[in-house]
Length: 277
Image 1 (spheres, helix red, strand yellow):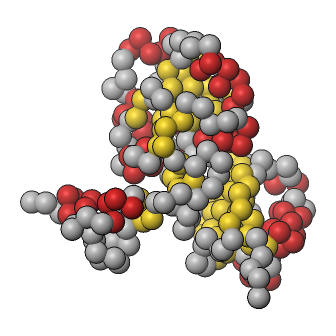
Image 2: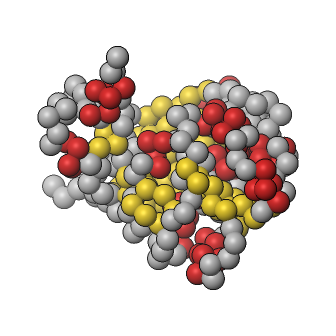
């Protein structure tokens, strides 16, 4: 029997959800009914979801989602696979849909302006004076990043406020475009930067995946890490060669998997490095 194409969607919205706890069971029920897999995060400040299923089931989920006017017209990142990239379906209640640990950062009330992928590419085409700031974690930037981007070498997003405190003081008056995978981290990171005195901060609308969707992917080096079984996609949003270490969750190239320091489902070169005395 021929397998059907699987639609992968990701979306988020920062919005006050005082009824967060009551939303969990309806989301569980509809996703189980539609045989969807992935993760939905619900917090009192918003929703974040990564889901995959057959097209008609994804369409039904979106119809259910938009029956609540708070979730109307959430921008979606859409890609396709010939297999289900998630192993199970989870609906989780969280304090934050993206963990930063700063209660005063509320993107539903205040965040930096967006710059569209096409306008950002146009800036790069013209070689304009702009600082490109990557807000993702180190295991993501290892897979790929924009040319000349500043990599903050974050082990976790919670390290972001401290990391930007070490940027040169003159950056506070320069134009900065920041980016992440799909845009959600930049919503919070931009607030942190503006609170720290950075005056000309913009966030790349839709993140790296939005840039891939709307441009030819110029100025991007490598692939883009994604948080599902695909591990990474290229600028055409197609799955690439990367796989993930079972033990430490680091993304691995085919070359790294033939290393003597790699054993399937046990360890990889990064495990060995991290466990050195």
